[in-house]
Length: 214
Image 1 (spheres, one colour):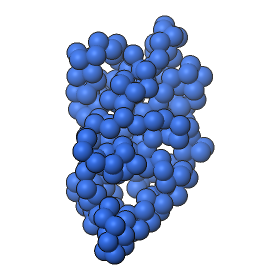
Image 2: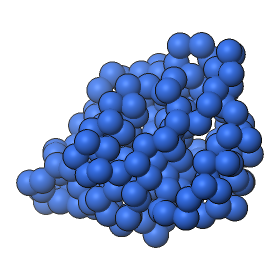
Image 3: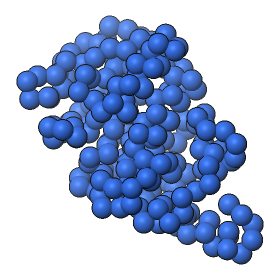
Image 4: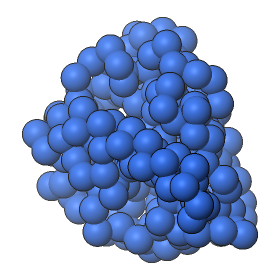
């Protein structure tokens, strides 16, 4: 972020990394926000949905990563939002009929947060079908995609997911770095204050070498 020669070179390298990552998902570089990992990215997305995008209800499942479940519990207690849970079967597969029933039950601004691949049992979410259902019912769709990125192709033009997250060490990158994808058009309210890094979305000096490693 510095204006001297070395700072400009570092910034150029970070922005090249951002463009390379964005092209992998068929999105624009401005939609990628670098974070310290998947947990921070999940928190940034969920907090932003409630505090900035007007979400008053989150639909998730009881087998999500704690980065989602504990954050939903915090948002419920602190901001009195509704949190509901889509049913899963004995194999950890989301009951899509129940999810759609939950979406039909209310017209309040809703975010659906379901993980792409479960980190303990490996169940894969049918993201194309879920994204279509969310779009049909005007719900936002966030998927904790940490276990999928680098292993399964994700084209965000073909599958209209609003928010995804990544943690570099899940695809042989450095620990302590990741990113959040925010679909274009969503303003981002930062959780960290004190600087204007990451287009004002995440104050903190960029972890340059880890971003390049990712």
